[in-house]
Image (tube, rainbow, N blue to C red):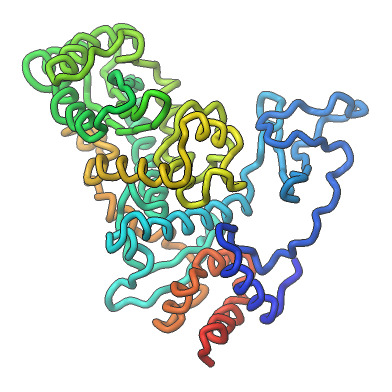
Length: 455
């Protein structure tokens, strides 16, 4: 790998500050015109599953193939899946670009939520501590330590991925323990009819405070638990926005003592869900969509994908979108609907929904106001103790926990250095440099001093 000199690094800082909305460049990579695709590769831009080459001269198709996007010059790698088709490979550079995007999205929150905890998140230093740059020995990724975190799972693109991933690991552990004891774990989905013009906050509060308790409290709720031999639940709160407006819904993992089919469990839940919606003043849900229970395979698949927080990590791999998520809205508000980081399929959906950059910000604020303070993931009382899990940590505690205790310390930043990094919005570039060329960090810091007129 060729390494840039300190003057190259300084020039890259100037480029980064001049070009708005672009990912932070990597000082260890040259932006030369990409080489032509290897022989046998093929151009299928914006395709997410590719058919292997028909003629391989009797040999096995390559595991990884490369091509490049003629619009951007980006090299694209595809890896063969178990089905024999090629899918995009989530590379180290993808991960770094995702991190860059998260920082850009966090900065855009300053416009939506001025003077909020989110604006201080990853800017203010923990009292009595020094900011450190460390590199995980396990994941080979760099990160800052001793910065204050807001811990918002709904409104912070830096904290939310950490929180959801750590919650996912815990949920997966709980499932594994329960299944090892011979129990069943099923995935249930609960929805209510929704339409354009619905008050999201009012509907959400009715679902949480009036409808959901009907499934476990009172005589009917207790009878349901006994009938289906329910040990406990883990409820996840989600929302999307589509042609019919906001769509808040629950997914719940059902931990059962076994003996019933998913259809039998669904049939037991349905009357209580229907009755709860009617008594809460909501429209009557349909039998087809209002309540659904799937087997353990679907439960495992859901847990695997949930913690990834797809819109913040591998959103470029997700297809078939019929609605937008809150993270989609924040991404559009940050970069604009026509930015190259907004997937073409999502762009078409945004046009159909008449969502431009300004409206994306307004919709995101509606979402955040409704969901702020509510728990994304909720364990029913007693389930953690039953499974032998430790006391649950808060979102803030999870966000503040160090990514990897077995990490190498690359540099301790002085208060002056940290101030310069924050002032120039160089955090993502500094972390990318720490990933690839940590020996250039001193040159990078010195270039920031020169840029700020400090010798």
